Length: 193
Image 1 (cartoon, helix red, strand yellow):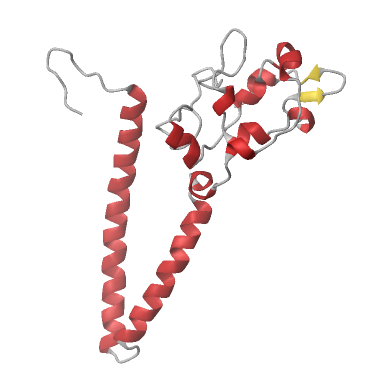
Image 2 (cartoon, rainbow, N blue to C red):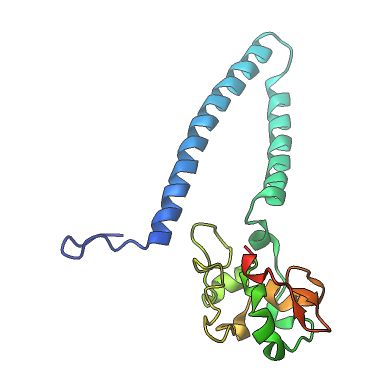
């Protein structure tokens, strides 16, 4: 990203925050990796030199351990939803909820919840994500979804909304409704993350 001296720094604050975070994590990770690698290398060479293990056995075990580590990373990385979700969101039929009739009560509180995007969402390029928390739906500083209209509380990307939004059913979510049928919203809606 080249900077024009006459224009000053035009870096998007969210992108800058994400880059600083990534660089900090990479720096710490590289130092830890280097230290761990040195220990493992020294230990392996000591075991081989002592005749306690053969180099071929080390290679076989290393390959097996690598596969286990990859599977573990897929299961525990924060962006795992993005990596594994392959469902076509346009083929999903969600619950039938008359949102337009209730939005004045719930104020679209579901749009304050954390949502992970899919590859399909990213490929479309319509739904925006938080560069500081990769593949998580972008929210405004007040906690509402970036795509929620501040006045009407309606969704600005309803036709392209993420799979999670399509499948979500607020009727039994106590964070949203004390009693859905009686039309009684949770009085703490504004406290949702």
